[in-house]
Amino acid sequence: MAARNVLPESRSSALVERKRAGIVDRYLLLQAGLLVVRAGPALILLILVAAVALTTDVFLTSRNVGNVFSQTAVISVLALGQLLVIITRGIDLSVGATVALSSVVGALVYRDLTDSGALVILAILGTGLAVGAVNGLVYVYGRIPHPFIVTLATLSIAKGVALWAADGTLIPGVPPAVDKLGGSYEWLPYSFFLVLGLALTVLVLSRSLVWGRWLYAVGGSPEAARRTGIPVNRVLVTVYVLCGLAAGFGGVIVASQTASGSPTFGELAELDSIAAVIIGGAAFAGGRGHVGNALVGALTIGVIRNALNLHNVDAFYQLIVIGVVILIAVELDVIRGWLEDRFRMAQAARNA
Picture 1 (tube, rainbow, N blue to C red):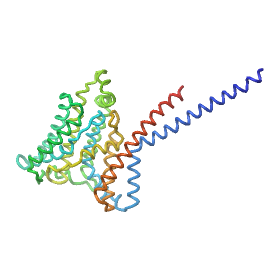
Picture 2: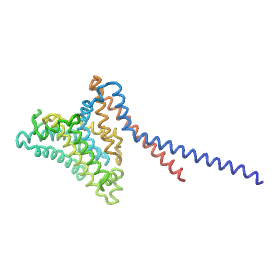
Picture 3: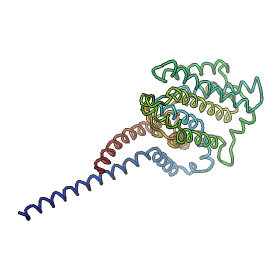
Picture 4: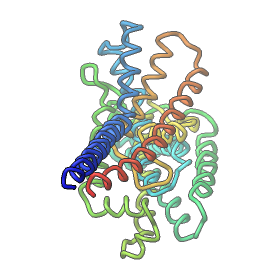
């Protein structure tokens, strides 16, 4: 009888071991897959860079790299502000119009009031700050159902005011301090250092301060954030103010690069900023997003445009290619969500 019981017990033990080994293998595969998908934005950018570098010798020259940084500076700055808004489940459609309005205000202040570079820059930034404050205050305290409505309205208002103030034409002239920002140190544009400084500031705000924890909590679940005592309304107003301020910095960069102010600056920049954030892995569902990935998304758009220009491809193909990249990024986000669910299940089974 004793001999009969040994075989079933050994078989049972072997089955348990095989099952446990299968769970571990599945866990490791899911972990590896999740790491690859999470690195998706950077991988897309690296693949693009490698592909373009192999097809043209000009791409990796210092002059062209400097051009890419210069051309993506405005998108990068706007993406930093848009990132904060999207983390809270919002959107800001007014950033492109705010860039135009702030540049016009700066040019008018320089032409009609003062040649002080500091005051002109303050006027440009103040304009962006004011538009952001209107967006946040009207959305939150006006109890508007969605920020899409408010920011669509301010997009129209800001564009209309810019066209009226500038008489629909470009206003030439900026102070030397602004003009200098459009230059470069060796092959690196000064705007690159401005973007880097703003990115580090946003990184500290979102990752090292209590406000940053509030930001992600509000994006994860606004109702749960309220119940835990987080000042949700203040957080929401703040993110729109900061997004408007980022658009003001975009106005400074555009004015420095063109030595002028124009109501046509920033056309479709709001779409570029949203695309950069989504390509960078943030989700409209809120609660997720990272400064580094937003910049990767902005650079991806810049590299695509630069590559198509170097290959003499018609400009309208840029929209098609960027649209395809956005779809890929969204699909990667869906896959990441699926993998995270399976990973949590596998982790629970492994620890059981």
